[in-house]
Length: 296
Ligand code: GRG
Image (cartoon, rainbow, N blue to C red):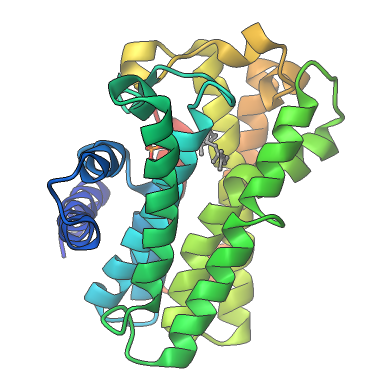
């Protein structure tokens, strides 16, 4: 593995692309319209931040990289499904994602719903596969944790709170609660899955959970900041939407500089939680700094 952060990240981007290509071809029969839409949604774009967090967490415990990459591909399928459904007219009604037309624009609305459904179920199929981990107990733990993170007590609950919050003014504690579910749950899963694969001890699990909790919030704050001051072509999606919709965000509550200060505070705290680990946690330290300075 290369040593510096950018090379490590690009290596993971390439590896995940390859694993996803194979899995989508295998899982769909390849030449169908559904396969084309799933490829559009999941391949050739995105920062692959969650996969990077997962393989970097797993590497702390010397987990086989192929197992980590397959688990990371499952997580990315679930993340991509959430983006496809979030972009639908009934949700955020977006026409641009990862610098390309969203799935319902490039295909049609019904295809986008099915594409999301296909990616969601494919994610769980990958986790249940013997090739992901030979130990059935570990596979069950990965599946249970994924269901909790992505389901009605995790990401979906966060999305519902987000929809209900439109045009309301919310105290910062409620925004934190909503964002911990909507965005944080999958980021926390990335680190939790690394610990499950590595059969980590309780102290390591706690340290990783606390790190991921702070990182998830910092990630959401930088997302709000990009929406506030980023440009569509640089960010790869429509910006300025939160203000337009009157959404309560970290920026609307704290102002841009207050929000940035809060993101910095969260990143400092995330780094403190990593003090438990040795130099093998360096990629996790670097990704925390990357989140603070990200431009997309
Ligand atoms: C299941 C409909 C449904 C929604 C779930 C995750 C989510 C809720 C909606 C996604 C919309 C969104 C913009 C959320 C804010 C933060 C976030 C998840 C941004 C996108 O993640 P990145 O920046 O995207 O990691 P890439 O394209 O790099 O993978």
